[in-house]
Length: 518
Ligand code: GAP
Image (cartoon, rainbow, N blue to C red):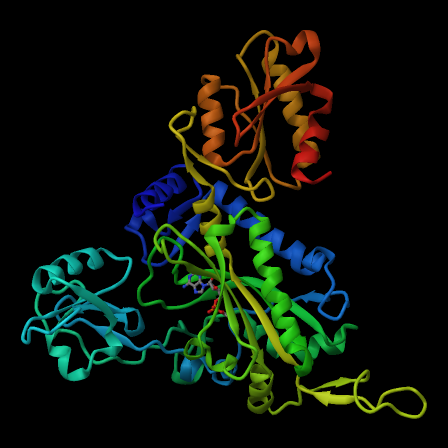
C-alpha cells in the first residue's frame, strides 16, 4: 500500500463519518481527532472486544502458563492523580524526549527521529549534509538533493553525526546549513492546575498512561476483593501526551485512549507470563482480521527498553504495517515486563507498604501448610492503543476494487463493524417498504446490543450496496419481487458480493450465526 492510499483512507474516514479533525470549523487543532457516528461505533466495538476478551472472559478461557485460569479485574481511575504519582513513576523527571529546534523554520523535532543523508563513500569536504524526518515529505526532497551533491549516499541517525560536523547539516525543512539547535529535554506531560489559585503548588498533570492509576490502587484492589497473585487489573481510558510531532492521522495524537492490563505475578513466573501475554495479544489482534503479513511481534533491543523494563524479561511490540510506515511497521501495542519497578517506587514515594503476602509460597511446614512469603509482585503489562487499533483496522479493511459498485470498501471484521447489517426494499413500492421496515424492526430488536442495523429505502440498489460497503457493513438483506410469493429475501455478502436467497423468517438466525452472537 502506498502513501496515496493513506490519503484515500483519510478521505473515506472523513466522508463516511469515521474520523473528523477536532475543532475543524476553527481550522483544527494539531494532534486531536474526533470520531463521527460510524467511527464512534467502531471504536466502541474494539474497546468492548478488548474488555470482553481481557476482563469478562480473559483470553477466551485459555489457561495461564501453569494451567491456571487467567484472572483479571476492572478499574476506572482518575485522569488527574496526585502529582507525586508522576514523580514516583519517573514521568516528571524522565518522560522527556530530547528535542531539536530549527532556528530557520521554527520547526521542532524529536532528536531520536531525525536521520541524515551523507556521502556513502569519501566525504567531499565542505558540502552540506541533508537531515530529514522519515515518512515526511522532507525525506524525498532531501534525498534528491543529497544524491545530486554526492551521487552514492547512505542514511545515518543524526545522533551518530559528530557535533563538530553539525554546522554542515541542513534541517529537514530548512534551506541553509547549521540551523539545528542542541538537543533539549521536553516534558511530554500536559500540565494543569487544581483549584482556584494557579500557583506552582497547585500543578497537576493529565495522565500520560492509565497504568499508574492501577499501581496506586493495587493495595485497595487486593484488600477489597478476593483476588490472589497472579492476577491482573484492567483499565481503558484517555491518556494525554504533548507530542512534539503529532502526525500520520491518529497514529501519534496528543489525546488518545489506552487499553492496559497490569498483570501481577511472582518474580519466578514473570518470564512465563511475559511470553504468555506476548503470544496472546498477537493472536488477539489477528483474530480481529489484521492479516498475518501486516502484523508482527518485535522484541525490543536492549538500548530501546524503557527505564522500568531494563532488568526484566524484556519488552515486545506488536506492530502493524501502516501505509505510512510500509515497508516498515508501527507500534500497536507494547507488552513489557516492568519488573517490580512501579510498586517499589510508589512504596517509596507514598511511604506505604505495598508488599503482597502469598500464603501459598515459602517453606513447607510439618502440618502441610506453607509459611508464606512477602514480596512485591512483578508486573507484565500488555498496553494497547485504542486509536491506533482503530486506525490499523481501517487501513487493513480499506480495499480498492474498480469492478464493484463501490470502488472503495471497508472489509471490517463483523465483530467490529459499526453497522452489522442493512435492510433494503428493492424498490420503494409494491409492499416492499412495509416488509423491509418490519424485518428491520425485528433485527434491531434482536441485535441492538451488538451494533447498528440500518434501513435504507432510497436510491438505486447498487448505490445502496456501495454505501454499505464503504461503511464496512458485512451483510445486506433485500426485499424484492419474490418476497411476497415465497417469503424469502436475498442476503448479500460484502466481501464476495455474492447473494443468496433465504427464508425471511430465518434472517435473524442467519445473522446471529455469522456474527457469532445470539
Ligand atoms: N503504560 C505503558 C504505555 O503507556 P506506550 O508504549 O507508551 O506504553 C502504549 O503506549 C500504546 O499507546 C502504544 O503501543 C500505542 O499504541 C499507543 N500510543 C502511544 N502514544 C500514542 C500517541 N501519541 N497517539 C496515539 N497512540 C499512542
